[in-house]
Structures are given as structure tokens and as C-alpha cells.
Length: 509
Image 1 (cartoon, helix red, strand yellow):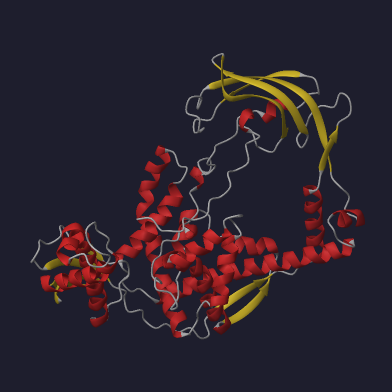
Image 2 (image 1 turned 30 degrees about the vertical axis):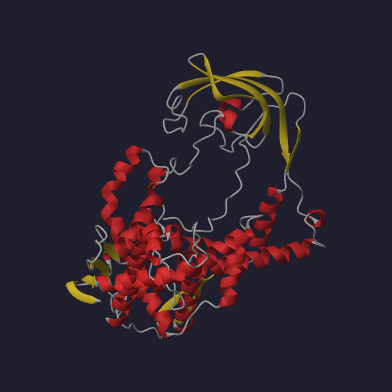
């Protein structure tokens, strides 16, 4: 194989690979010799079919296999001999297969990983905001838990429905006097004030009594998924068949027993433990943001454009999901800001990967098995298929491993940091986290999470396709984020979501 470097500019590399025709022919001959004993052809004994007949029947397919094999080996040799570290899968330009007797000539383009500068990781000054869980916090958690256990009981005769009551109703909706799909139903239950129905519907049921008929008039939201009725005036003939009031259980021993516990004190202990873990996680979130800010300020090295583009596309896909065309057009004005977020993420991801490798941090086989088991549990009845998928797809396994590797690197850095503590209230902690989040764009531009790093134990530790870390959508897209839109009465009792399908065992493409 002959290699000519055609491009060496920044992180971009280009090569021309020439693989002699004799090499390809030799591979074809070896392939014919390997398949000959298994070829069956009328008139010949098994294993006695002449090579020229095998070439005539299967030569083109064997030659294509030989070319792919030669190209794969050529790329591996190129990367190994020149000690290249491709950031993404190299691009191979093969316009057409060479004719018999011609050399194989291909153009190979790639971006390589940058040299990551060393940064001091010992004694980084950080502040841990600590919230003490007091009895009032536990009392509030108990009250919320009791509210979640409420049940609805029949209201007294003549009771007028108010916010928090459950209304049972039959309804028939029309637009311009014509019934529409999903606009008719019977026995539908809705808690007034829940915001479950389209705006204006629940409000017009306030004060209704059991047996009362009402006409509800409203405008279907312009962004409603059913385009045929979106933005139009609708009228619903509603009959309230029942009104029920909420009955919240008392916070006492009986509540604890109904939840399977021995005593109210045991329930309080569990809730206190949950609150402590929740607040500890919030505190860690605050420290992690400050840590990433510190690291980001220490480095400014070039990052591979292809990695930035992959990260940006993941961010943009999540950002624009559910947006109207008008919202997408408005978001275009902020595209540059999100490119900067993607660049920061990739740079931080490479930096954390480098720190983790130098520190000998890795995700163990036992930890990886646990991650796969947890993912498989999300697909009941398809666990074996999920395990096979991750076993056969290194890239998917790397993406599953990435968040844990990142957290282990962060833990390593936090353990080496110089940490001071300050006691605050929960409200102050949440405000500290959200103070830089007055607009999602502003906070994410300053504190975007890194593209997950995959660690040294992974063959694909530099692919940043991590949509789960994309920034929150701007506030103007709040309605668009509800993928199904506000419910019409007929949609208020949706069918159960379809069971998740496990990932395909074989990657497509």
C-alpha cells in the first residue's frame, strides 16, 4: 500500500491510499480457495468445482469483499503507522470500484483529536451549599404525600363544583355545528384546576352541580396537533353526571400502615432520608457546575469541527422538537449561541476524558453489566434482545457507559478540591442553581454540560452524540414542548402508551 498525505491543516488530515491490483487479486484467489470446498454445482463432485467456474459465478461478489477487506486493513495500517487519533469515523471517498488489473485508489479524510493541555486538578476552590433537613421540611413532605393519597368521594346534594373537585361528565363537541373526532365521550373524569383540558374548559365547569347541563364555548389553541380544528371556535354540550370532593387522609399512624410501614415515625425517617439525598444531589449539581466553569476557563484548545457539529445537531434536535415553524424560525437567530454551547461541551468532554485516562479511571465490567441490566429492565419481555444489542454495538455501549464515566471523573476532581461549606436554605440552594438560569440560553451558554466522555476502556470514546444533555428550550416554546398539545375532552383519557420497543439487535446503516 502506498500512502500520500494530501492535507495537514489544524486537526484536518487527508490521505490518498493506493492499494495494488495484485493485492486485491491475491485476496480474491484466497477467497476462492476458501469457498471451493463448500461450493455445490451440478456435474461436479463436492469440493471439485474448478476455480474458474467459481470466479465466473461469484467473482464479482468476492472481488467486492476483497476490496472492502483491503480498504479496512489499509485504514488500520494508516492510523497505526502514523499514530493518528481520529475524532470521528474517517471519510472514505471511493467513487467507483477499479476495473480488473487496476489499483484501488481512495481519498481518506479525517479529523484528529487535539492534544489536550494539562490543567491543575489539585486544590480547586469550591463551595458546597449545605441544607439541613429540619422537622418542618419533613412535615411538608408528609403533607405532600398525604395529598398524593387522596381519594374522591361523593359530594353532598347541591354541591357546586370548585377547584380541586372531580367532575364526571358526558360531552359532545362540534366546530361549526359539525362533530369532530375525539370531541364526544361519556363518563370522563377531570379534576378541576388540573389544567388537563384545553384552556378555558375546566373554568367553565366551576359551580356546576350533578345533573346540570352546560354549554362550553372556547377557541381550540392554534398549535393544537389536530390541524383540522386548530385555532377554531368549538362548542361542547356538557352534562355533569357527578361531582366528587377530595378526601385527604390524615397524617397519622394509619397513613403509615396503608403505605406498608409499621409506624408514622418510620415513615418520617424514610422521608427525611429521601430529602437528605435529594438535597445532597442538588448541592452536588451546584458544585459540578462551578467545577466545570473553572475547568472551562483554564483551556481554549481547538476541537474537531465534526464533533462540534454532531453535538450541535443533538442539541438542535431536542431544542426544536415540538416547535412550530414560527418558533423554529425564531430559534435560528440563536443558532450561533448553541454552536458555542456545543463547542464548550466537546472541549469539556475531551478535557474530562484526558483527566480520567491519566487518573486511571474506568467503568468496570460489573458496572457496565449493571447499566445494561438497568436499561434492559426498561423493556419488559425484551431483556435478552437489549443485552444482545449492547453486546454487538460498541458505540451504543459507549454511549450507555459515558454518563457514569463522566460522573466518576467529576467525583475524582471533587475529592481533590478545596471545599468550604456554607449552610443555606433549600430556597437559597435552588436560587443559586437557577440564578444563572434566568433564560435557558444564558445559563446553558455559560454552564452547558460536557458532551459525555467515554473513557479509556472504550473503542469509541470520542463520539459526542448525546441528545440527553441538550439545553432546555426557550420559554416561548413551552406549549410546543407538550408533544400532544392540550387535551380536548375526548383526549383526556388517552389510551395506555404503547410498550417500548427494545433497540434493534443489529445497527442499521
